[in-house]
Image (cartoon, rainbow, N blue to C red):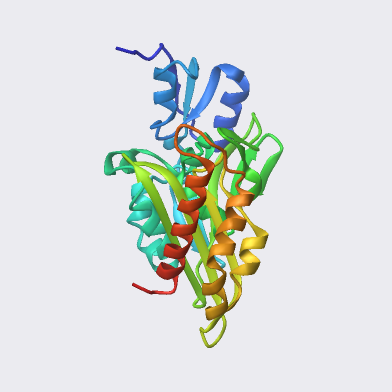
Length: 288
C-alpha cells in the first residue's frame, strides 16, 4: 500500500499571505485546493512537497458572480458548486452541462476548477471548453495582478505559464449572448475523457448562418488547441457549414498534432474528431 510522505498544511488568511508563504518555503511547497490530483500524485511519489498551502480557507476565493457581462469564478469554487450555480446555469448553460459530467460526484464535491486548470492534466474537460469560450484566468503574485488568456495559460502537459511565485485566484468567462450556440461533447473510458470537443457558434440575426465560430479539441494531445482553418470552415450559411464539417474536423485534427500512443492511433483519434464535431454541431443547433 502506498502512503503519503509527511507534510505540513498551512492556512493563510489572504491571497497576499499565501504568496508570502510560497516565497518562504520555495520549491518545498505547493498550493493546495481540492487535492484530488495533487494528493494522488504525491501518494504515487510523482510529486514531493513538505508544505501545502491551503488556499481553500482564503475568504472569497470560491465566489461566483456576474459583472459587466463576465462570469467571474473563484479559483477554489468546486466543480459541484459551479454545476449547481443558478447564475452560471442562466448565463452559460454549456458550462453547467460540461461540469455535470466531470469525473464523478465525489470528485466534483472536492475538486476545484482552479486546481484542475493549474494541474494541467491533458485529459481535462474544463480547459477545452474554456478555450473555446474565450476565457481567461487571473493570477496574483509579488508583482501584482495579471490576466492570462486561456490559450496562453496551459503551455504543455502538466505545465502552465503561471509564475512560480504566483497563485491563480479566478477564472473569467464571457456570458453567453442570445446569438450564441454552444456545445461540449466527449468520449471517455472509466470517467477518463479520451476526447473533449467544444464548439461555440455565433448566429446571424435570422439564425440561418454563422458569423463566427470557435472550436477546440482536447485530451488527444498535450493541451487543448483551436484551429483557425477549422473555424473559418464553420462560418457561413448553415448548409455550407454542414457540408464543411468533415474538412473542419480534419483541420482540427491537423492542428492537434495527433500521435500514436497507448490510448489510440492518430488515425483513430482523427475519426473520433470527425464523429464528435458533427455531434457537437447537431447539439449546438438543437438537432436530435
